[in-house]
Length: 126
Image (cartoon, rainbow, N blue to C red):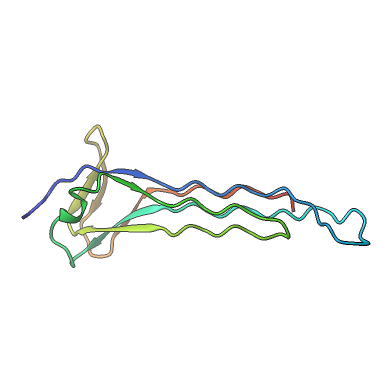
């Protein structure tokens, strides 16, 4: 079966929350702030490749969502960044928005288009 048109909804991941924490240790007064920053949310990329010749992989995948970044923790521990999602499409794929306006023309092998960028992690109080 040859599928040459697919309608997708893509959503990036949000950044993780920053932590508000204070250093607690016996015999140490006013240890100071020690909250870590949140991790970066995942982005979604379209990449042109010669390994596929149809959009059959996206026929039933209507919504694609990247993961959120992890939240920061005490002791200045930063949250983990979420992985980016890379969607492989055939060379010659044209990406359109809802109004049929051209966003990207992936006409070369390896050409990349950032569809949605992941959110930045929140800042901790450290």
